[in-house]
Amino acid sequence: MQLVKSPIGTKEAHRATVRGLGLRKLNSVSELQDTPAVRGMINKISYLVKVL
Image 1 (spheres, rainbow, N blue to C red):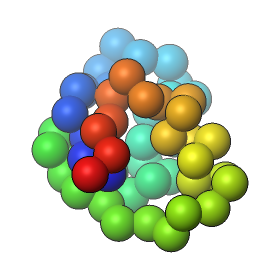
Image 2: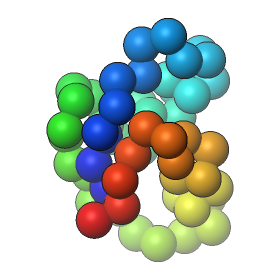
Image 3: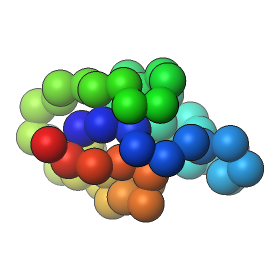
Image 4: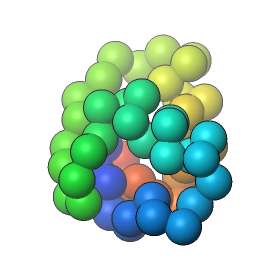
C-alpha cells in the first residue's frame, strides 16, 4: 500500500495505525501479507492510503 495523504491533523490512533503499517513519509510504500489484522488497519485509514 502507499500513503497518499498526510496524517497530519488526523486522530492520534490513525497516525499510530499508519506507523504500524510501516508507512513513514508521503508516497512511501509498504508491502504486507494479507491478514485480517492488516485488512482492518487498512479499512481504518482507507482515506489516507491506496492499495497497490
